[in-house]
Image (cartoon, rainbow, N blue to C red):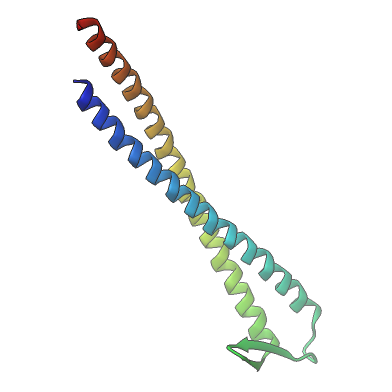
Length: 126
C-alpha cells in the first residue's frame, strides 16, 4: 500500500516540478515583454517630440532606411498594442498556473500525510 502511495506521490511531485519550471519560463518571458514595453514607450515619447520636418530612420539589418514619421508612429503604436496584449495573455496564463500549482500543493500534502499514515501502520504491524 505504501509503495503505491509513494509512486503516486513521486508522480505528482514531478508534475508539480514541471509546472514550476513552466511558471518560471512564463515569468521570464513576461519580464522580457515588460522591458520591450518600456523601450517602445520611450520611442513613442521621442517620436512625439518630432515634427514633420525631422527625418526618421528605421534599422533594417545593417542598413538605415528612411521612414515616414506617421508610419513610424503607427508602427510603434501597433507594437505597443501587441506587447500589451501579450502581457495580458501571460498574466492570465500565470494566474492559471498559480491556481494549478496550489492544487498540486494540496494534493502533494494529502498524499504525504497518507503515505506517513501508511508507513506508520506498516511499522505497527511489524
